[in-house]
Image (tube, rainbow, N blue to C red; front, top):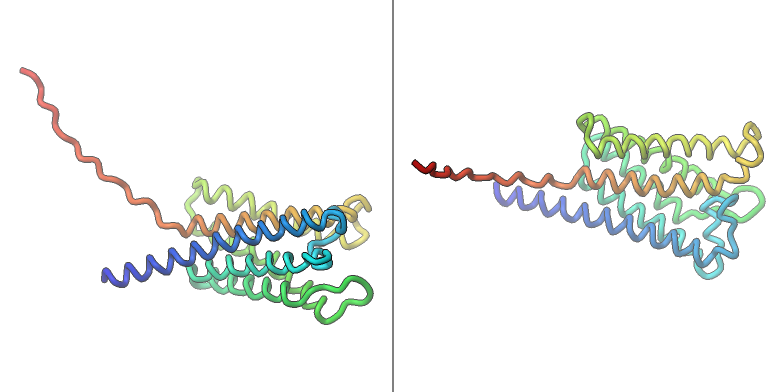
Length: 217
């Protein structure tokens, strides 16, 4: 029994470490490619996919997405059922996004099509994973409140980002699709981090022994 508990604790520890390290690397690589490519890429109007064309450092975009896949794999090892399957699909889609880049201009290539659909599925499923966890958390908990807010923000940004590709919104909003997607990416990392926090073992309560105090006669 003790061996099984130790094994489960070890798996949980590795999953948490994999998840948090993956998220940290994803954020570092994404921030890095934005810094080195600040003079080449329009962060307001261009999508994240165009970061792959940053001279000499476009690989950092793929590295960031792969690190996000690593974080999802860490969560997969800690989850079960539908949540586990959802996060597994997120991990696979992130790998596809990194392996199949978009094209710079002209008609979409097969690689660009795979890239777009995989990115769309990943962006959609992360808030779905949050919803699955929210249903298990007790009402009024801090974790539940943060997840609800992050999920709602991500879902709203996803809708705005998708709609910005059509002429049904003002042109000013269409020109800001890069901002919407970057905000959505940050919220997705936050959601994954919050999902990892919900998987951390609870701190055991410390029993306090009450010592009777003698009363003076």
